[in-house]
Length: 136
Picture 1 (cartoon, rainbow, N blue to C red):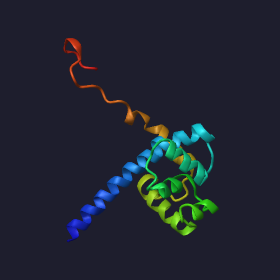
Picture 2 (cartoon, helix red, strand yellow):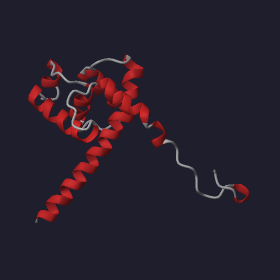
Picture 3 (cartoon, rainbow, N blue to C red):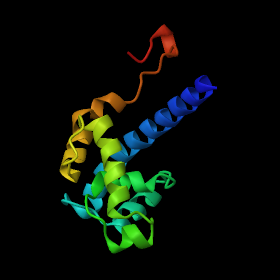
């Protein structure tokens, strides 16, 4: 039975990693484009930008934890996330992305999005183009 639990945990972590990547590498730069570089973004700014980009909002609390460190009226009223739960989410994010540093800010997350932009470059087309040449 523990093998099944381990598999579910592996799949959950893998899904969260993909979600984090989209929130870091797609949502972060879009927030800067729309609102400028801020110390914290509001829940409404994060939610509106995620919806505009058609990013899944199922894990929106994680996006808020990436770009906010203080609870607000909207974190409580819209997401039902109080400071204690926000701290738990930030702890999970810090363990995976910031070597356990709980004091990360939105500028640190935005710095991540700039450091590995080539990682998501368009892959070459390995199919043979005209005259037997590939895209390389």
